[in-house]
Length: 350
Image (cartoon, rainbow, N blue to C red; front, top):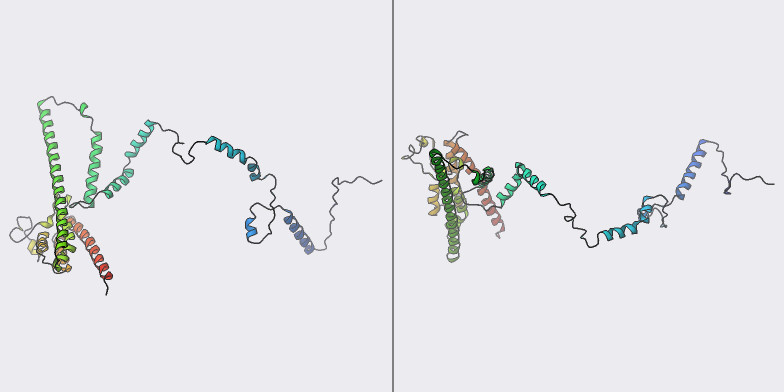
């Protein structure tokens, strides 16, 4: 009679091999680990191994308990539910899926945003860059002009409505109100006159350019006329410059000679300056086509700026500040003209 086996599965009990030394134990452990590794099922991401030739193609076996197996069992059901819920909707329309915002909260947010200067700076710079360039107004002047307009709009919003302004009752209040109204009308008239002058100047410049273009088409240019077309835009921009810190005038147009140097506030002018030069002298040479080369025009402009910097040696002098500002603009324009001329020379066949 056989004794009952303690192994109900009928699997033969492993035979323990007695090792003689440590090296045999390591070899046996290594062989067992290799067998166990071969028995593991392949992971679904074994495609990379197949491409590299590490393993041979074999149908992957998904082990139980993996997350992708649990998700895959209900994948079809979830896709059908998603399609049913979004039937007739634009899946890419994210705006309609947002919650409607309350009007009061939106107004409060916009008000807080407008009160932040650093957020308004980008809008101001974008507006300035989109504005057309005007004759007689450089970039800094346009920036100050736009900042003044923005400040005026902000101040106007702070002023209470006309219906709530107190009506002057006494004679003194009526006189003061009339005076303020007259000053306001005067400022408006001055603004209209300046705008009209600017428009007229722009129209004259445009008409003059059109006449010059038409004249060049009908006649043959002389070398002096061709040279004038190169340096005249530089002269025109220097002539049209105005300086707000000097009251909007251009002091480089003023002619200073020995007869009027005392009357213009520079009695020692000719003690410091040997050869006077100004934009009016340069204008006479430009109109009479006196310049034979570009270097002559550049020399006169640089002499004018050198005299202004030499006579007004104080760094805080407003005329020196104006001279430095004009010098920066002149050097930038002259550099651009010289670059264009050099580029044209390279294009000409040798």
